[in-house]
Image (tube, rainbow, N blue to C red; front, side):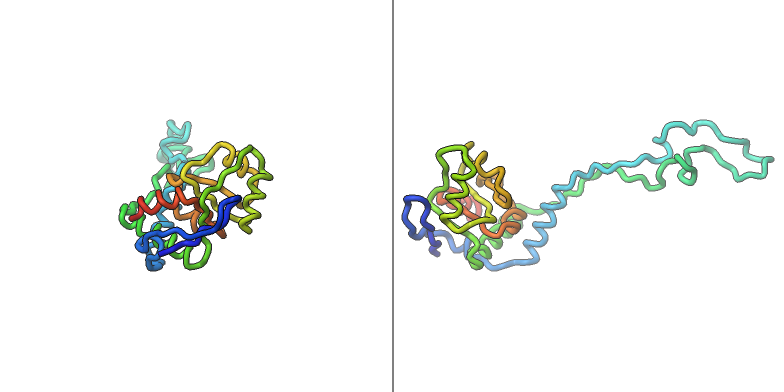
Length: 205
């Protein structure tokens, strides 16, 4: 299939041939949901921690004798039913990640990219660079393309482009090694360069 190559700077508009298997795949919502859920679960820190009765400081001595005082028997002042005691079912650090096969992940990425093409949210350009570290330079390039909330994907992120975009709200820039499903779905438009498009096609073919 052909994708429109938008005019960028002094470069003229045109078309580029891409694989149908990557950019014209069927929309598989259950697969995308599973992969996206797995990605978000893997992003969780899982560092919540509480102390159980054996980890709380103190409580080594029996507070009073077992019988004869008319009070309920107690073996420790750090019991969960005591103020200052441990937690009954204490939360511990855990791994929330969910396993997703490589074939499933790539299938979901093909489905997402194909849906971006169908919704006219994927903008292809020959190149996207700035000559100096200026936010205004990046904004001018985006205004030429009529873009505001956009994810920029390049084959390699230059220092000028990274520094020029970091203060622009709703704009992010990544290279092809950092592509993931959450960002592709979360932005209104996805701007991808010709070089990055070739890398993505080779990865998902």
